[in-house]
Image 1 (cartoon, rainbow over the protein chains, first blue to last red):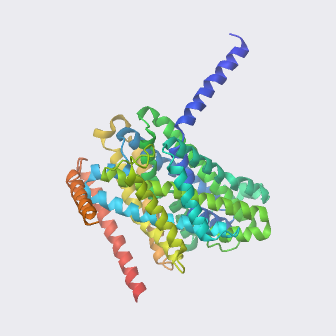
Image 2: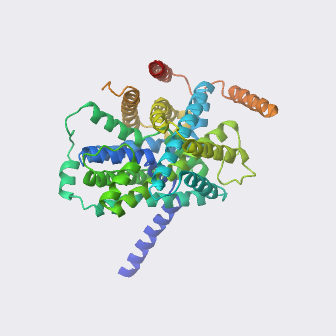
Image 3: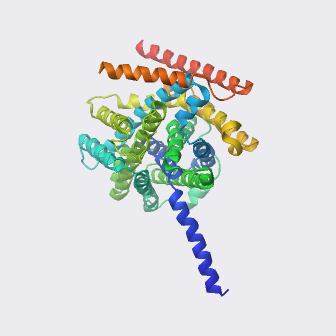
Amino acid sequence: MSLFAKIYYQIKKYWKVVKLYLILAGPGLVVMVADNDAGGITTYAATGAKYGYNLIWFLLILIPVAYYVQEMTVRLGAVTKRGHAEAIFDGFGAFWGWFSLIDLMLVDWLTLVTEFIGMTASLKIFGVPPWLTVAGVVTLMGIIVLNGRYWTWEKIALLFCALNLIYIPGAFMVEPSWHDILHEGLIPNFPGGFNGQLFFFLMANIGTTIAPWMLFFQQSAVVDKGMHEKDIPWGKFDTLLGSVITVVVAIFIVIVTGTVLTGVDIESASQAAEQLMISDRYIGTFMAIGLFDAGLLGAICISLASSWAFGEIFGWAHSLNQKIKEAPWFYISYFFTLVTAGLVVLIPGAPLVLITLFVQVIAVTLLPAALVFLILLLNDKQTMGGYCNTAWQNLIGGGIVLTIVILSSLYGISVMFPNLF
Amino acid sequence: MVNMIKRLFLKIGEINRRYREPRIEMSLGVRASLLILRIYLLFLVGIMFYKFVLLLK
């Protein structure tokens, strides 16, 4: 075989692999990038402004944490062909099932409100009134889901995921010192010593990386996409790629605010965008567009997580592959969650800050339960067969779960009692 | 409307019957995990209730 023939054969082989991945890519990438939602952007912006580049090393640790937790939902979904809510009902009975479902519904709805807070605040910078943002977002999301195909929805979601990368050129535009980033950011350190405030920031970063809705969303998405056991390696790769991208974006946000807004107390991402507008109009615009995109992507996924879970339990048709006539309750619950959450933001004097804090506390109650159920379900040999957790996976997964449970609980408590730590 | 609520309650009853028994084998490890989870959640709800009372005061 000639050299050219060999090269042609290799390229064709690799292109086939890329094409296969493009078909199977989606749930992992979407869920992980959507994790950088409005709340996440605020946390990263505040972390950079407060501690500069010093906590970049901590964000890097979150890559394997996010991956190991989310890859378990890929295996569970592909093997059982059931969403997470249904798996909990089936595995642990009605009591734990209802607890998880009601908690999920509450936390999803409240998180959706925070996404609308982020989206309206970001477009307000450009002079768009909140009512127009809410109406526009509901219409856009309606168009996205009503096309009647999971595939189309997923590819549109991936497009918004790509827009999330806007922070990367933004970071290059502020011309940071790469020497400082490498020296301050990659060597583990606790700026100013390990105190209560730093602890709060570390916990907030963990809290934004693993959220309860992500477990429910990814498992349901794997089922709706129709993934099988043979697709698990691709699902894992998809999740790993998503984990890397989400943390990379987070790091670039930290670089932007760590360079331009060092020492500024940031309370919201829109405030960060406004501050950045003063120093550089383009960077501020990038920040605001990124915040809107993050809120939109979060809203797209979170509203679906609830509708899928309800459909699984109540036995309604609950697939994006079904038209509105075939799955009316699925779409009614989807739009009901979306519209009511949007309307809350428009109520004059609505306690939006209190809602944002409440989201964190309620999420803390669901997260440990969802993680414990996840580990127990992955150890059910009868259902999982050869895809059961190995001893190593239990050790790693169990360790991560235990750490997240302890830290997120402390985070929830510190939100309620800010002066405790 | 009344019929809809009635149907909803019937459906909830059906779900409760369907998932009455947990399918996962309740080994000692599973029982212990669920017990710890219950205690943890009660503790957390207790703290939230305490905070609520503090806010009211």
